[in-house]
Amino acid sequence: MMGSLLLAFAGMLLLAVLLSSLAHRTILSTAALFLIAGFVLGDGALGVVSLAPGDELVGTLAELALFAVLFTDGMRVGWAELRSAWRLPGRALGWGR
Image 1 (cartoon, rainbow, N blue to C red):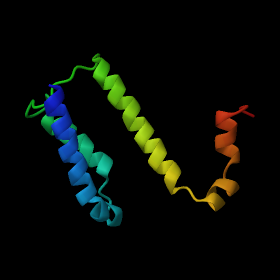
Image 2 (image 1 turned 90 degrees about the vertical axis):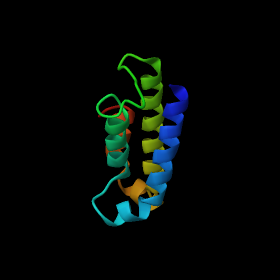
Image 3 (image 1 turned 180 degrees about the vertical axis):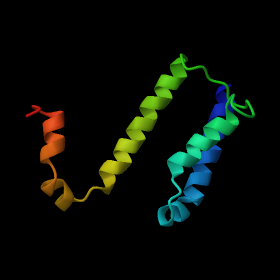
Image 4 (image 1 turned 120 degrees about the horizontal axis):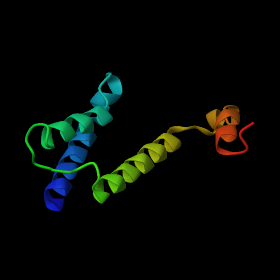
């Protein structure tokens, strides 16, 4: 199971990188690509990768996905944007006023 999951993830990551310039110019999202691939490769269609919601691997994958999304979004923020819009996120993460 782990080998097929790793192979599916590597293939989808390669496809996402190849389509990233197209996704940047259109409404196509690489996150949507992973969502569709998860349905097609999962128990919904082909059954190549079989995971249950209670599996420990699902939680680990969710944490890794959250880290990747937050990291890439953080890399896109410019210094000027960060300086001008820090109050609302600062309140949410800090003292909450």
